[in-house]
Length: 296
Ligand SMILES: CCCCC/C=C/C(=O)SCCNC(=O)CCNC(=O)[C@H](O)C(C)(C)COP(=O)(O)OP(=O)(O)OC[C@H]1O[C@@H](n2cnc3c(N)ncnc32)[C@H](O)[C@@H]1OP(=O)(O)O
Image (tube, rainbow, N blue to C red):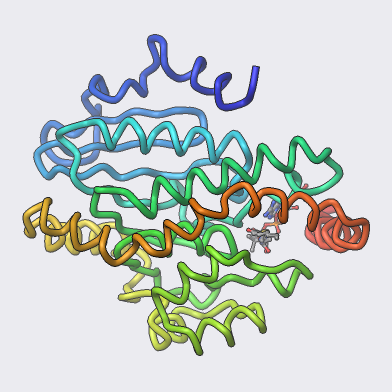
């Protein structure tokens, strides 16, 4: 059974994640807040506010493995279908690492079919987030490289914790790989062409002050205020009638989405052939070993 089907089967029947049947929270959130969890994603929904906080909890670094991408996609699908939810805040369950980006072990030492399945899942999550009818906010409470940065860029606004260790950016070139056109487009739509070209060629990871200056994030706030600020900004977005906000969002993003939809299969083939190259496999293995050596 394909992974998506396996994870769906795991989550759907009798699951505590069933969209309309999120359990009442034992603690936290406002009155009537509900909590649900899958293995790697925790959802805290506050129906009165119309907001759900989606927390990544894929230790050690919240990397976007195939399982994580799939569980996150299923959570988002359920929230999209939940009429009590109009806005979603993405954050990490534990501060320190928002997401280390795509899971490098999914791109190393596997076969072409696996690379294709993985890349399709990355595309699907991006499409779900970038086209979401919800208002989306990112409460970035940790470091946020590459795929982690991409997740935050799909949101309507970003709040970053004021900690110099929490850098953010599309650093792919530093690994010897590159950000595909739709990663690039998402960044261009946020900070403009010139700033994106510089950021991508140099694989820049911006400190909070730099990220704010270039417009990669909208606000930098003390670490303990990231989620509360994201929720309070959300109330501004939700004050706008949904249909007007959604039509505007679609208008702004449609051309970018259409580009990927048009070239989806070619993009998968490009990824598979690029990542399968011996030279690229070597570069990724060296990078992974360097990360692992730190700890052994
Ligand atoms: C055409 C091709 C397009 C491809 C587009 C690619 C997009 C991507 O997202 S590529 C991934 C880019 N990500 C990074 O460069 C981040 C790498 N990680 C780090 O810099 C650090 O781990 C950290 C700053 C996120 C956290 O540092 P720290 O708290 O010190 O944790 P460790 O470095 O000790 O890591 C713990 C553990 O996790 C493993 N790991 C880290 N990142 C990843 C990852 N992205 N994928 C898989 N595994 C990862 C790391 O190897 C450690 O493993 P062990 O030593 O075995 O515990």
